[in-house]
Length: 211
Ligand code: BEZ
Image (cartoon, rainbow, N blue to C red; front, top):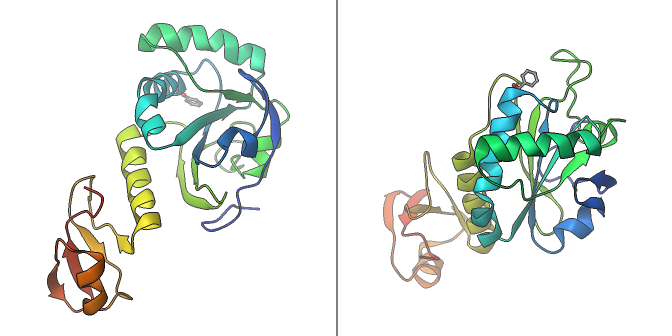
């Protein structure tokens, strides 16, 4: 069954390039990003894995673990890693799940039969520390993902988890945020001491509170 926002992210145990692990144990009490790759030794996936690996420090800073899955064996992933490292000039520094039996792909509904019977689509799941699914993204095999967008969403999710705010169109870290409509003007004055500007009763902007 499809996984929807707010669902509990299913736990699993799987063999990976970094040994056998339980998803929940791997995430610990931090955030996690699980993302699928249609197949090993394919061009777009190779650029993606290298790209995520190069930016791992940004995910570490956000207390967020990366884990990829591809429906090939761990041995194949290990051979592929050499190519990814060579092409990216980096080090693939997070685990890739071996999923020949499609256990994880099926659990997370990553195979969309009308796209392909055997390969996964490019799924992204962001999981919060309480193991709830906070974001789902689905791209076709032909479109590589955008790390900037995933970091941007993570920043927004982490901000909304800490403060009663949401983020507007094209928001990026450091921009003004929107005060939740449920917060009264009175409470907003206390919660957001930098002040706020009111465009409508339901649309109030305030400087990003954690900056
Ligand atoms: C790719 O990563 O380039 C790719 C993977 C599966 C199907 C098509 C393209």
